[in-house]
Length: 204
Image 1: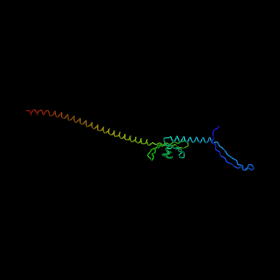
Image 2 (image 1 turned 180 degrees about the vertical axis):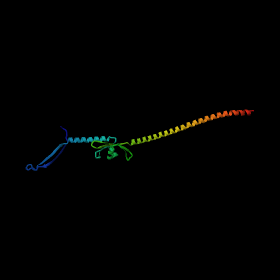
Image 3 (image 1 turned 30 degrees about the horizontal axis):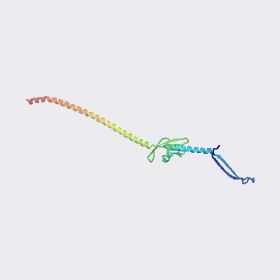
Image 4 (image 1 turned 90 degrees about the vertical axis):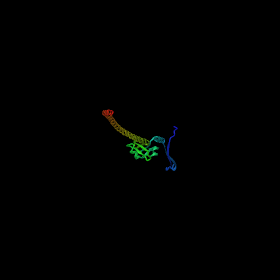
């Protein structure tokens, strides 16, 4: 029908060993040809699927790696290859939790592992260094704020004590001033009568 087919051909030339003298020593070609088109097309589709899968894996923003049940690396992206932040043992341990691991260079990563069909494990590693720094700064700010609140509470309590002392001293001062006024009034009254007599006698 005008389409090309992929064929696998194999053959060999053999010398006839027939008892017939006319055929004895004659060379014959024996061979077989197999249509390989479907097989090659399936292989091509598989290769394209691998390329598409690798392209998809490369577009993952995190470090990605796929392990087989024997903990051998099957597939990964360039972020994992350039970083190599963890091994298979760590990936398996991350199945039960999402650990945060500090790297030798000071960076922090968070692992997330999931088991897939067949017993393999796929693991993602996310760089959370900036998050940790911001979280640390937030904790420091929160701690400083708590300290400030404690200081304000202490200051308010101190001011309350001072205010109470001031009120007490004010009350005492007012009582003392009142006592002084009463004392002077009494003294003025008590002195006025004899002083009048003395002034009168002195005038006489």
